[in-house]
Amino acid sequence: MEGEPVNVNEFQELARQALPKIYYDYYSGGAEDEYTLKQNVEAFQGITIRPRILVDISRIDLSTTVLGYKISAPILIAPSAKHKWAHPEGEVATARAAAILSYRSTCTIEEVASSCNAVRFFQCYVYKRRDISANLVQRAERCGYKAIVLTVDSPRLGRREKDIKNKMVNPQLKNFEGLVSTQVSTDDGSNIEAFDANTAFDASLSWKDIGWLRSITNLPVLLKGVLTHEDAIKAVEVGVDGIVVSNHGARQLDYVPPSISVLEEVKPLILAVGPACSSQLLDFST
Ligand SMILES: Cc1cc2nc3c(=O)[nH]c(=O)nc-3n(C[C@H](O)[C@H](O)[C@H](O)COP(=O)(O)O)c2cc1C
Image (cartoon, rainbow, N blue to C red; front, side, top):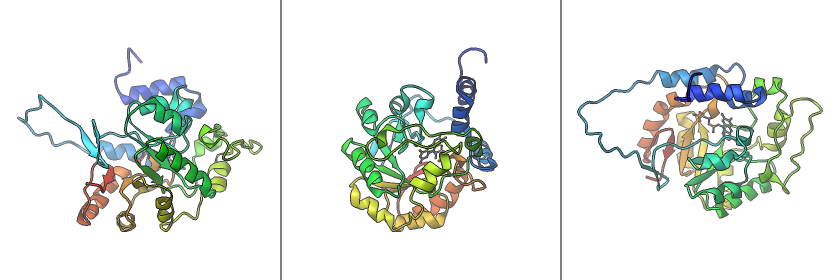
């Protein structure tokens, strides 16, 4: 590549060249045949802009609010795990721009909180050991995170074939120190399915558990991973504060629709029951 990178694709190419294959594949891969992964990109490419003319654009204000908090542009960074595989500063650096901190981040909840004053949310998975999930959620609340984003599309981890082939092993996560043994066996090669999904995640998670989450925190609760209007309506009925329409970057189920295409199915229904919407994060607070 000649000169400095000027767009996201060029940054991606630089990352491909710079990172060990096992890490690049983890960041860029999707589940199974990666059909939805391709569709995610193509769906965006299929959306065109209707440009309106003769509008004064000499002063542009992109600021908006999410859950009542003012942000300078309608852009959040989705929770994603293991940033230290790409850069030694990890999630602390990411949070300077914008962040929903991943449950499986490589920097701790406290490190990210003390590194910047930005509005931060905390993403949560529910482990069979509820005490562990409660511990992380309550630490996030004490550290000033403003909402809990409960990821609901991962009762089991997606079958990420690249990670399986690369025999990817999860790093030790400092957030869990003292709570659980993060030492994982590599006897059988790839540990990723056994450690993340089959052992730790609570596969019985269901609508009634939103009540449990509410009982351990006073923060607003958003559900991340909604892909149908039926579930969007249920989310409203159980009283969550917002939903994130998401297919998890095509890393969980393959052959599901691109998130952006589902917005059209979900948004009118949410509007019909009251709350307002913005982008892929549908915020019920306004
Ligand atoms: C490398 C990587 C790691 C991710 N880790 C998490 C995670 O820890 N928790 C989570 O809820 N989503 C995780 N995601 C999914 C993202 O939050 C987000 O949903 C996805 O990148 C964009 O797809 P969407 O538009 O369908 O949401 C991860 C995505 C990537 C690419």
